[in-house]
Image (cartoon, rainbow, N blue to C red):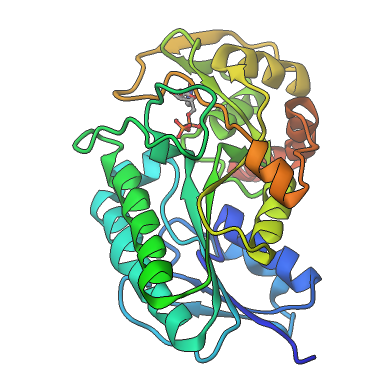
Length: 320
Ligand code: UDP
């Protein structure tokens, strides 16, 4: 059998780089694409001498053609609230024009296609836990709308390319994921709390910290995504971890894992911040025979060295 070729957009990002590693380990040849707006070459540095990997520096909002590929993973997008607030229009464009351009490639080359969608499609959910059949509660003009509506448009586009053109598509709705290579300065809760604890600074909690999230370790997510890409399931599927934590409980886990003795300070809750989030994983469990394995305490322990390296890199070099 000839070697399979995969295209990964957003390859220099947190998830894109882990996905690239997993595909290479599976024997694929990988073409990564990134415009480095939020990605980082450092995430791919270890692949510098890997002959089965190449990187195209491209913005997928412009049409591009890397030649024939067997499978496409569309992971390009700013993803943390801080990044997509800063890059609002870019986020809308990558989730609309960018998605269409990658779907056109899938159609042209008869490639399998998997799109990275999000639990943000559910907005501030009124159904709990969130099942894939729930249509969501999204503010179309709020500060999060540039991300949420771009991802919802992408789901419609992916579905249309399947319905009208017969492209083999998959949609994964990703819930909060963390681990090594999560940008230390992206403003997300795990990156903020871990770096604050390691710097000996107070932990910032927005609102009262009673809002909930369900945190998935990156290796579990990538395993689920690879299984979904190989499956014949085509409607959206949640992948995440279904153990739900309040943000205050999450902060206490961070204190335990880091051993930091710092105080917790409370800051205003951002507008439209979802109050509860937990995936219903019935579909993933039954169709993919998949289960999240790494729980929050262990996942934070496995991320500690990475965040410590990020914090150490900020320190001034000792004078000789
Ligand atoms: N949050 C917090 N302190 C921080 C950063 C985030 O309390 O320093 C809260 C944020 O308000 C939200 C939750 O943690 O309720 C998760 O935020 P994140 O930005 O990680 O991702 P989201 O799930 O909101 O996309």
